[in-house]
Length: 39
Image (cartoon, rainbow, N blue to C red):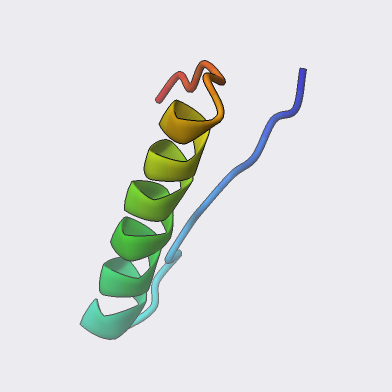
């Protein structure tokens, strides 16, 4: 099991957007590889 934490901490709105895009990409790639992702 791999635990991965994505956080924008106290960053500006752009950091939140970057985390959201990274999460969306992670889920998309995991689905493509038939890997389970729990959020």
